[in-house]
Image (cartoon, rainbow, N blue to C red; front, side, top):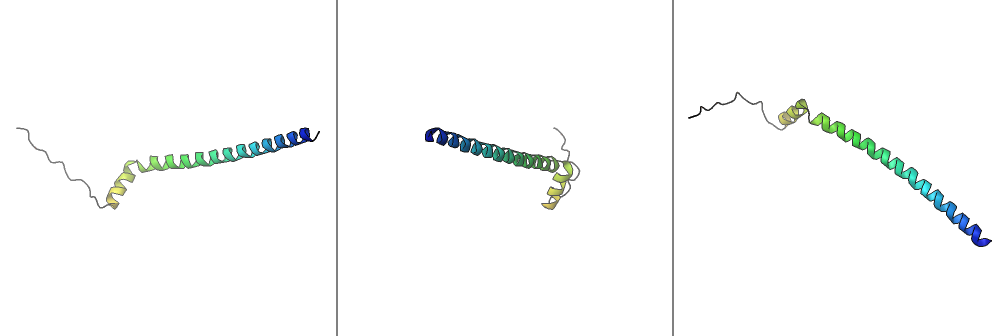
Length: 73
């Protein structure tokens, strides 16, 4: 009788622990998904022409001059 009660209790504890793990993993997944969305948004914003131009100007680069055409021989 004691063995059956102990087995039942250990299974209940294991089910509760697995339920906790599932809730924790779902929470971690949601958090990582939100971070991924933020990073994608940042990449999309930073790869735009105005953002690249601003970074170049902030780095000390200037506007390009007129192209230099070299005649072919």
